[in-house]
Image (tube, rainbow, N blue to C red; front, side):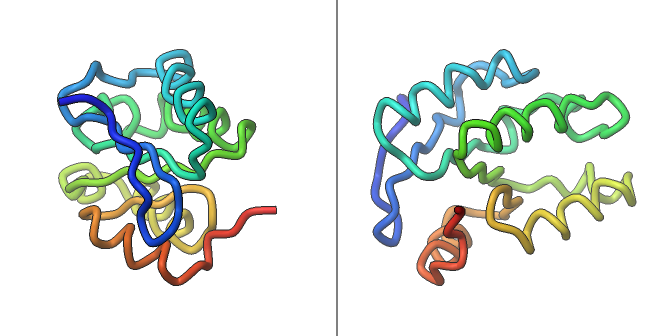
Length: 127
């Protein structure tokens, strides 16, 4: 299944294929960011299953490197899927998810419909 580029609630989005290569570090997401910019999207949606466990173990700093890359290129990142096994094991990850979901750059969402609702609210506009 290839990546797609739908409009979700009027916002151009890159939806990464769930069966794509794992995104292990900030170098792996460079292609995602480049593809997003080529298609003029505002958000990249990455299935949680494409993240390696290191992303969810904050002590590895993998998440920080990846998140910073998306921030630098002003591309929103939505991690979509069930990450409860990771949040159940880490209070620090729970805090990151909670704080990120309050912001406008990074969201952890259970499904694409949650993204649709967030984008429809229009509260994601970044400056």
